[in-house]
Image (cartoon, rainbow, N blue to C red):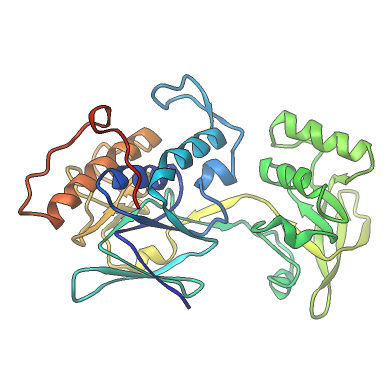
Length: 337
């Protein structure tokens, strides 16, 4: 178990969480971000990195993944730290007014304020209906690819037909001993370029692509050793594999956040629309997870909410100071030590 001290604890490393790092950095505050997903960027990075976004000011069109890359570059001078692949399990306000968050992996983070930028909530994998699936979780079944090197030299089956399934099939083709992509239909829901790349790999014999079939049973004792495929015509085959990665998307849930004593409405956290503070002083919610009258679930609105909330929090922490907003066109950007 490790303990991390920071100024701002950010729960959620999607676009709004990453922009919060920038705005906090302008106030000379350091940030630590916690996210269940294995990489920064939230939905934009994990679900639709190649999807164009049209309503970011100054960008007539920007790919979701490119937006995340730019936000990471914008946050870079302020040296944020991350706990990725970890879910924020508990939130506690301490006697001295600071906050303590403990993650699913036992990491403890203590900070002066908490910004919940969890998007639509904690994304949990959509699991296929396989009777013995739970028996092999963390023993050959992986719902998220945290480190591609885990699969080096291994035989892998990937289930799914969306962007994530196709993208990881392409990446692991150069790492795994062999990759088999299994999809229940001949129609994919991924970017055409990804489908073309995967088909090219299949034509060259570098991967196996099986359509009109799905994994229906897992084989093995202590660890996964194989999977049973059931084809749409009712026939079955067994494949020898060491890893099964079902990638059928992520389902948003509030998760543990729902038990933290925060005001809730419409499966979101209610905030004061003038400050974006929750009913707990010092805790804010920004982005899609916040709820108030006339709320718009747009990334640009989350950016605005983060900027306002941080300046409100600065005044709360320093009531003796008259806080004057200084434009970056005048002050520039100075790195945190």
